[in-house]
Image (cartoon, rainbow, N blue to C red; front, side):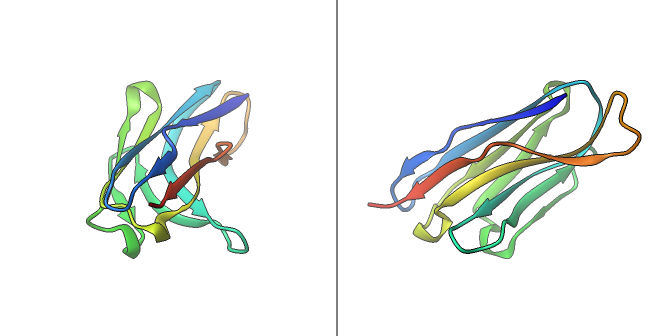
Length: 121
């Protein structure tokens, strides 16, 4: 069984910063990619940022230059540093990991429970 546990969401004023963390645990063999998605009511979940085991990254255009994704492979943890936050960044943020676990014949996606980020005065 694999679990992704997120932390770090909350309420912040425009221009402020937040740091999200997501730790993967369980019978993990190898994590190929970790990332963050976000979703607002009535919209599909969309990629914010992702990072591979080799630390290659990609970002949504809307967050480039403001958000930074990083990863601690030894801790199976991914971070999202969010700076210069805007009201339009308000969403539920979900952690994602594409990994292979013990006893599973193929790699698959796993998701965290989601953490609310609200940017408002």
